[in-house]
Image (cartoon, rainbow, N blue to C red; front, side, top):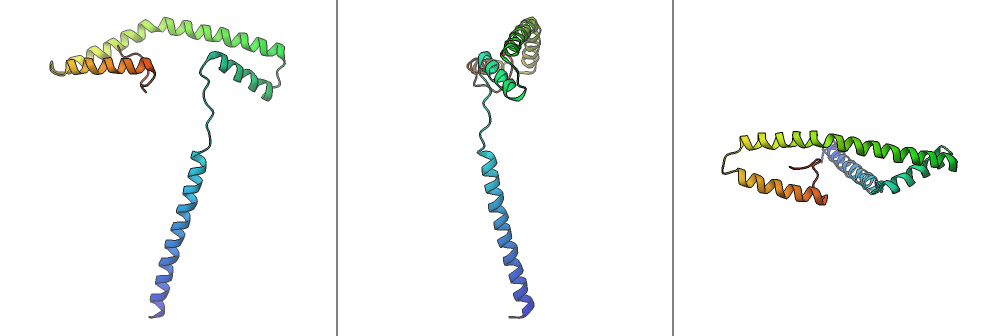
Length: 138
C-alpha cells in the first residue's frame, strides 16, 4: 500500500473517531442540561407570597415588619389585577365572539356543525386546564 493511501485512511479514521467523541460529549452535555430540575411555578397566591417573602428575606435581608408590609402590598396588587381582569372580561368576550362569527362566515354549512362540536371540546379542555390555548373559547 502506498504511503499516501495509508495516510488518507488514517486521516479518515481520525476524523471519524473525533466525530464520535464530539457526539458523545455533546450528548452528555445535553443530558445534563435537560435533567436539571426547573423551579415549579407556585400554584396558589399563598405559595407565591411565601416564596416571594422568603426570597426577600434571603436576598434583600428584610425584617418581619417589612415582610408584613410586603405581604399587604402583594395582596392589594392581586386585588387590583383581579379588578382589572373583571373590567376587561366583557371586551375580551366581545372580541372572542367576533372571532367566532368571522370564522363561521368562512365555513360552509356542512362544516359549521363540526366547528361547533370542536369548539365545545376545546371549551371543556380549557376549563379542565388541558388546553394550551389562552382565553375562553366562546
